[in-house]
Length: 162
Image (tube, rainbow, N blue to C red; front, side, top):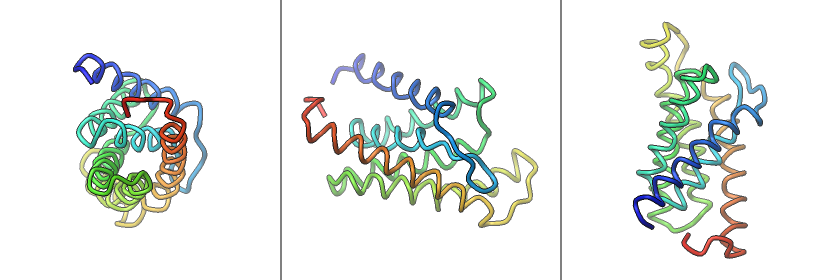
């Protein structure tokens, strides 16, 4: 894949994640669940690798914040989840491990990183497990969607270069 193709693909994933977050969401405890972000993380991790997946997650969080569609908590969870999804997929070559990495990376590790992030940048004094239920619901739902999409695309050979 050329550099131009890579950047274009990353831009499309960032657009899907940004717009999709407003089209598909549901309440999940103290926050809203945006599973499209997590689905994009899994798809990007499998098709492009951990580095581009993290950049895409950052861009989605940045765009959502700039457009007033998200909070600063979009950054720590999604980026950790994208990295872990890509890393586990690279090590195992199993799509389900990418989904697992996204759910664990965002749902558990990212939610714990969100606590000091929220305290420093948002003035919140939430406890260590305050964000975990909503992060887990959102990331698990999105990881399943992403795993389903990647499984179908690869099985049907719709994208030869993946």
